Length: 262
Image 1: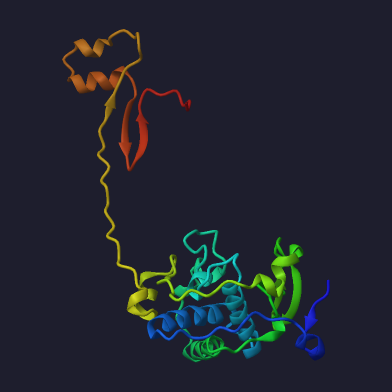
Image 2: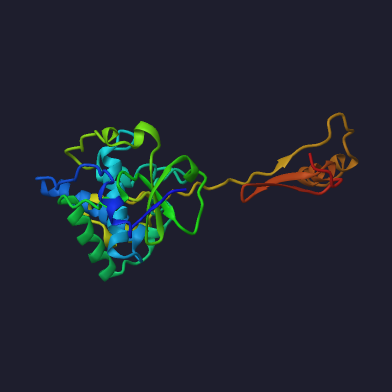
């Protein structure tokens, strides 16, 4: 497996890169893109060097230019986050965003994201659209072409024509979706995200379970003597067979059973 390391300056200078991104003239759109890209940098590479964080930001922007992915920053970052097992960036659906933010690390992530949106290109990762940490070996890694190792991450590009510069032809959207982490806690969203990213709290409605005893006797069985005695009808019905009732949504049988489960 060939991997271009950062020390190979001559090789890295020849690696093609996708076109640079530029901030939108619409301040609201630009702020949404900055928020999403900063989150990707922060949660995916908070402990990395600036090079490691720039590499992650570049992957997001590379995907935005590739037709296999959404054409906006937030669309790329939150792709699949509506499904618990479908997120492209793990932090958007594993609860990572419920933790408190480290102010200094967050400001650094925003600064790096802002530079990337102003046209800064991190060329060492080239046309990479995927990465993983050096501590794991995901099933999809052998199907891609390794590009570089930056810090604790290995970066890959797509094989064949999909990994060539010509494939990165998608025009960025002029708008950014109002993305929000589906699985982040409401408290976290209220504390950390701008108002336009917040979700309205949905009321929880508890549906009561009505417990009604069900009385029955064996089909074809003779009427028990208790039914003709002075005992109450309810006591006679209990003597005829097991009594079934619902308790907390669970069907419970009392009396007259043999221990067999159907």
